[in-house]
Image (cartoon, rainbow over all chains, first blue to last red; front, side, top):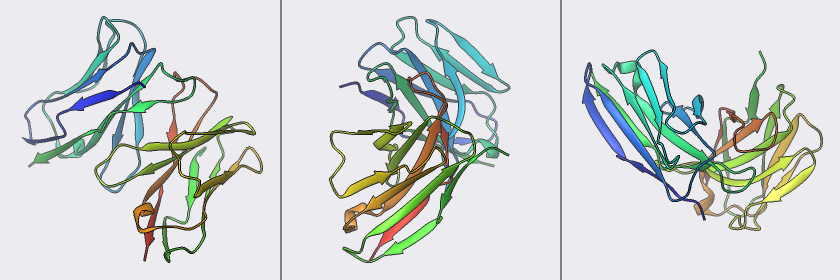
Length: 111
Length: 114
């Protein structure tokens, strides 16, 4: 079945440093979604990428979808303490309903 | 505000004692999902309803059942909770079927099994 690998599992940065998390799928995806889960919270939708090579920006966050639609990345510029949380990618394209979640990257930021 | 609500937020049960978790939504979405999330892991889909059609994941234990009496409500029943069932249970909704639909998650119910 479809698998989505996400690295790194953990990332600790100093406030102001950049951060990137990567996702790779074993199969071509129809779309990829990114969610953020704060400690003790629930996943919150950030963005969806659909087109090959698509790049979207949300303030300091940049999301990319690979040309082959099998990989994606989330880059945060100049991290802040409010960026702390686990970032999950979730790929669509297997069954009609199911999003396959990566294991997430836990970002901690040292003020 | 339209939202996904889960009750209770924390649930303590005894080993083997049936427990029911509830989810309601004011988004009028067609699809409702139940996920299990253990510490430091990704959410794991247990099953989902598309309207009244129930779809079980192949690896979801028989111990887990679900009911959706109407569009707004969905319940997760754990018939005989084991220690391994202690987890956060997340309810999510999407407007329609299809993996391009955004999922909206509730705050979750954290289940503790003693």
